[in-house]
Length: 412
Image (cartoon, rainbow, N blue to C red; front, side, top):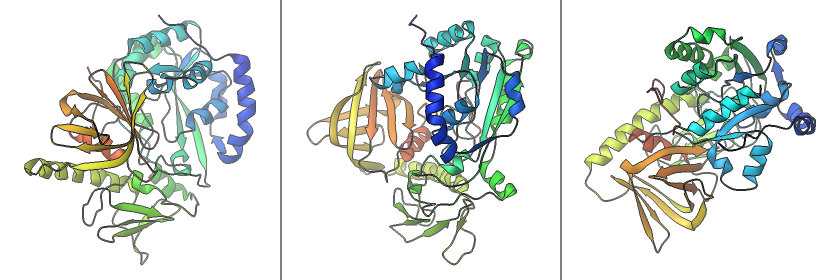
């Protein structure tokens, strides 16, 4: 077994005092039940919702002792990232794959009486709604048999949505729910019962919360970069024709346009309610529409790709090595049975039935496995949608850390 790296308490205290002033100023989080912190004695496990890129820092600033986070293995593939993550006590988990090493690591952290944090949804929310949870998390809790707490950030997505740049000014609340406060109840519960209880806490609706509490998230660029999330026009149903500017997203093909308010509500140019109430409903519609478009594509006998992106930086890695650059001006194209990669001189065909682990890191970086080879795709600008690739390949049946509502992951 590899060496267990834990978060040095002195380093933890130094970093906490260093970053706290900046984060408290830009992301002022209100802990709604601070009294619960007195009940939380290590070892225990945290299972938060994952609404924005800094929520692990915001959570860590509220917890007295160092928190050891499970993170995607791509963060550990090369230095200085590997060194930095280990210094913080983080440990790797392969995306969308079973990983016995990660389980052994958590068992060792339990023996050392440490705090473990896992995001059971697998990744950040794209549209402000919850994602299905990994069923294996319930089995893990049954194995660890330690107290379980569920921190829920409300408003964090709205302050900095996954698809956006910059910060919107608005409230964030954190509530830490004691799911299994002493761990003893886990002995009597089945994984199904554990999974159901956890799902009930994670399933929060950011937009309903905003509406009910009359919260606002102000920015002159409310809709800027929304095309990272929304990639199908509701009017003409074209893919990747949407673009944003300020508080407006519009289609370059048919002229369809919507304005996004500080409460994340769409409206038409004349101020009437938009085609969809919020980005979440638009996203739900485009997932259904994407399947229809793919079905139509597969019935068509033309040799053209379903979608294509150019100017891509493509990197390749074997097993757990650091990705090496293959090209900076590549093309990726989705065909009927494969993804075609091209650098102008050489081509690679990635057969769809041999692909797995499709994932998008942060906003745009697409990662996937073809057999045992790891591929990373970076877009030339911040306007292209990596999410459309995730959705297309998931619709075609590729396993991923992302799932559609109602879909169970890893229930074996």
